[in-house]
Image 1 (tube, one colour):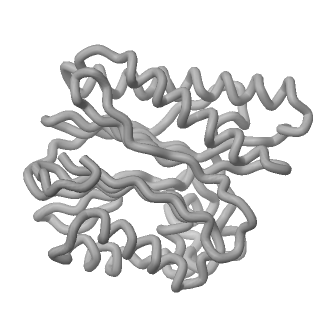
Image 2 (cartoon, rainbow, N blue to C red; image 1 turned 90 degrees about the horizontal axis):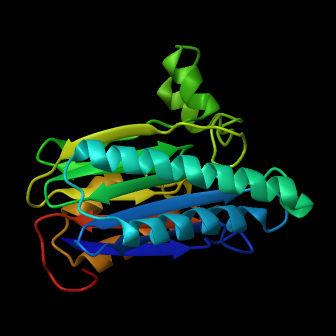
Length: 250
């Protein structure tokens, strides 16, 4: 399994409120995480950074992940604990009032991927069935699309596109969406913040992943595409290639 993580502050923002990474445990399983922080002055990067650091620490302590039920239970419990930590931190630090973070995290073993998400950071799979979004945005526009009030096309340019309905740390209790999929050789998993998904069409993401290039170069091309299309937000991606060992970050 090969993996690459990249983050970029984009062309407009003064600093990067995204956090993330790809981590290994003692068993050789991987955890990929992308978090997009929000809140008051510098509170967004505190929220996303705290979330990712806690995930990293807990994953490095975890034992064998025997099955999808174990992976999903660990993701759910870790998200619950992170949410409590962030909520209490904001309550005890007035400068962090209102802080929160989206999160998409994937436990990747050599048999399956279990993925959890809160907010509008996304997970995609690219395999023989095409390029598909695995996660569902917890956003106002997605609810409007689901209830038939606007079309998917309208959602792309909706004035309230950035309104999130769920975020870690903003309420006392929260539950993620969870999903497990089996993967095969040459499948790709892409996790990203909305700095990528809002600026780069899925057709372009698919075209980049199809190219016969090193994984590191594909990741660079995705970040560059978001910047070329405006780069108004921070851009973060975690890209995994399964059944591969091409060198580079793996």
